[in-house]
Image (cartoon, rainbow, N blue to C red; front, side, top):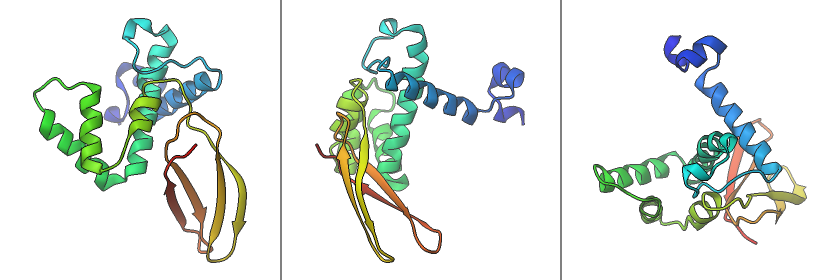
Length: 171
């Protein structure tokens, strides 16, 4: 039980790591909605006190979870292992991570490294039309944000299973 808590803070408050991660997500999302977020390319002394936690921990964690979901478990693991093997015991820069992941996955990750991490631009899609049948569905999406990143579409089948589809980003 103790190891599922986060040191003294978790012991005092009863929070787990998952609880704090969720709080960081919500704090980042609240800041982003109010346009109080800051780019992750800032130096630490340029963040507001609140944004240091929200951006560095919340936005980074949320972004890498999104990237993991987009690439999938096996491709993400292969890419991260390749990055580690190339850069272990060295001093890589963010561009080195980007180059290694793009090389391993064969995908352009400009939307993630240049836009998600490097700016305060938002990833925001809306469903504008939906037509379904028992065997297929047709979804029309609109990009309401500034990032042309991939978007996940999920649907429940008649037997209650969830099917996920990724659509590459667009204007």
